[in-house]
Length: 236
Image 1 (cartoon, rainbow, N blue to C red):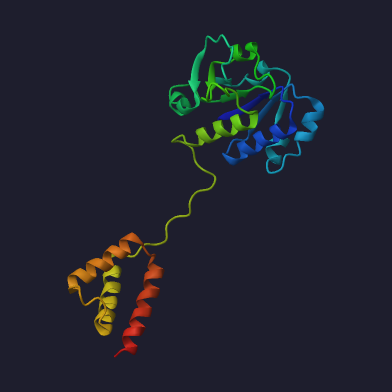
Image 2 (cartoon, rainbow, N blue to C red):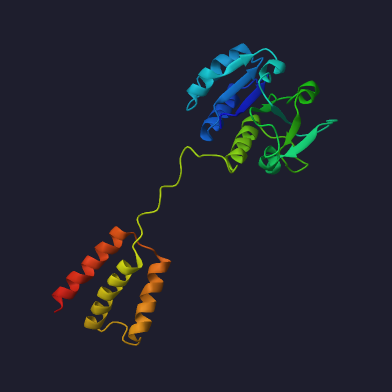
């Protein structure tokens, strides 16, 4: 997701900065911009485990204006507590839908520091507000948690390509191959007088249902068919 950047404004906790970078790495974001980082904290944060490349390539900037220079759409993440806002408010579950109509050549996700969040001036500088819905009793979310929730929501976008995906299903046997296996099993059932309370058609339907409930790969089916055929040979 190269058209998204995460902007941290005056962060103060190296663990949170590192956790934000790791969250970005988890979901394929790489552009981290940090506005006015506290120097000792920043030096400690650059050793973040699992996201060293993101930290090393992070841009240190002196103002939010500088961080947003190349952005076409910016979202200020805030809990809206005691905020007199005038911009559009986008809740996190509606983020992807809103991005369908936003100028998304370069989107900035702007987050404030752990103690005070974004200032009113920072919020007003952005195009819209991003709000993560929570219960009224606990309206604010930890910085790193807010970043990872936002990155996850972006990963659900239809245009998102995951870095890792579920392994493709094993090669599935054809209907003809399944029927050949059922024929071998049926022969074995006849030889050992198994389930003779069922007719031939009922027994095959029973086996077909079992295969559909627990599908086998072609290799697995071939192994079982070979086993059944060997048993049939021994029972001659």
